Length: 80
Image 1 (cartoon, helix red, strand yellow):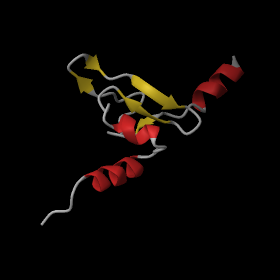
Image 2 (cartoon, helix red, strand yellow; image 1 turned 90 degrees about the horizontal axis):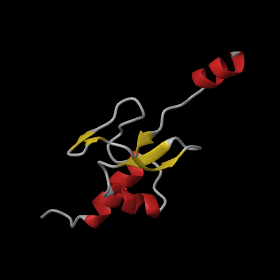
Image 3 (cartoon, one colour; image 1 turned 90 degrees about the vertical axis):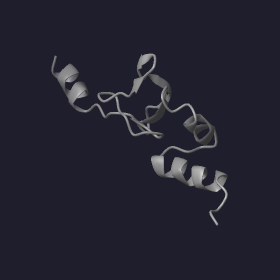
Image 4 (cartoon, one colour; image 1 turned 180 degrees about the vertical axis):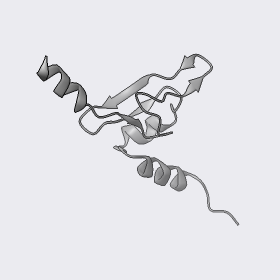
């Protein structure tokens, strides 16, 4: 029993690199609450079903929200 309690207290939440939702705070989508499309449990990050556009960045190696934002800025032409 003690091992189980210790394992539960050591759990770390995974966060979506697109929107920042986590295992306990999911997004509301047209289909209900979001689910994980892909998760890296070693880094505790993933892409939720509400952030399908972030899959492109994920496939390019992005494992943080900052990396996704940087890739989005590169895709957009400069203003002016």
